Length: 247
Ligand SMILES: O=C(O)CCC(=O)C(=O)O
Image 1 (cartoon, helix red, strand yellow):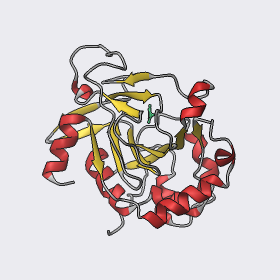
Image 2: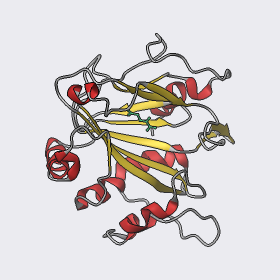
Image 3: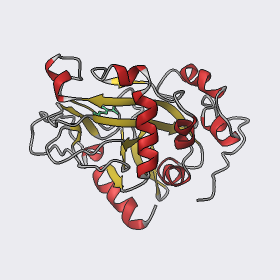
Image 4: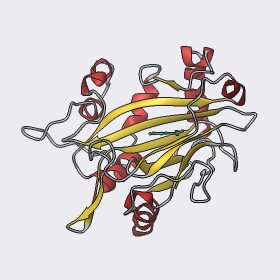
């Protein structure tokens, strides 16, 4: 990460990187999801996707993303869990989407959602890398957050329609990274087009937020040592270092 990017992430608790996925990548991923149960059931808010196509484990180990995760989490990190989110305006009326909400915040979830600077570098808990597979235009809804709230000193969650809440715009192929220590959540989807996002959540290598065993089925599908290493359960002693790829 550049100094400017670290400044932005520290200031806001989230940062957007543009054009991380090519149009071909986005098309391929959408096709794989369209052909899966999630494609047949667009009213389903959350869906699993890691085993739908080899491209999804490749994306978990994307060299640029891992370089950024290394700056945010450190040399010792792992995939914690991953899921997709999709929303349409129609499904909102059927009540199958997430209710408008804000959650997270500093030291939330038993202190796991941490954001702290020690010895000149940041220390983070669970970090979310969200890839947009469809555009999110101003006012569409979907992901929302309260910029800077990962450093808030008051235990307060504003209402979803507060002026403090932002709804970042994205183009398909963009990547939005945020710390779970940020107050964040979901607003109803207002666009005629669908929302579709992939969320890869990375943890420091010593910790886990999800049940670490939930990754076991994907280890068998890994095609590289790096993919296998990222899917390891948490530990500290006896570990072999993660071999970060060249970009
Ligand atoms: O993207 C969204 O709509 C919400 C994501 C979220 O709440 C989370 O990752 O914890």
